[in-house]
Picture (cartoon, rainbow, N blue to C red):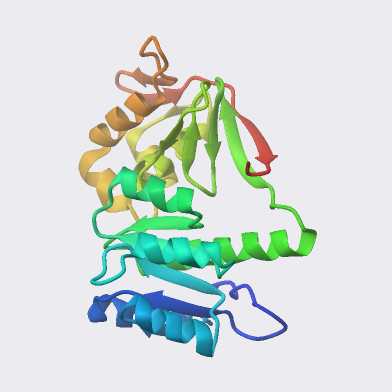
Length: 252
């Protein structure tokens, strides 16, 4: 059963504005989100976005990065500066730099295009829940993290913080794989078990390139000596050789 979306006020359905110059994608997202309980509208440009903001301010904006005229980063900057609604950014480029800049500007989340509508739906719900919690308490809500060997994996932001404080952004596939390992520390996991535990929107990626995913993840986990907690057990599978602690932390 699909859970109800987080209401914006009273029993009103949360209002979502999808800003994207691609009419096909915009219509798909508007229709999909509308089918899952949101009042959803589309805008082909930031000019149309501004009009919607004046007429009926949305509870959340899904904002494309690359658009003719004013780009998504500039629009995001304006929205944050004026205390506007939370923003989930989309980008066909999928570059880490774009994601970092978007998040530093104040975007609440970021997804590469083409995005899975179901994953976007989950991200939107998570952002609305976080915002609802922070407004009710007057303080940023706590975020769930996994801590191991001085590293911290933020389960909402999909960020890996190293012992020196450096933040490493993970792809959806890398995040799902690392969480699968961290959920079963010091247990031998076969390839099939990893696939099952990491199953989701990126299952096909894992099916096609498990070794590549693990190799990339190992590089992001490696310490100054090149050591990482993922162990290969020939003929058996893999083991995450670390003690994992679950915590909640408030964002800085």
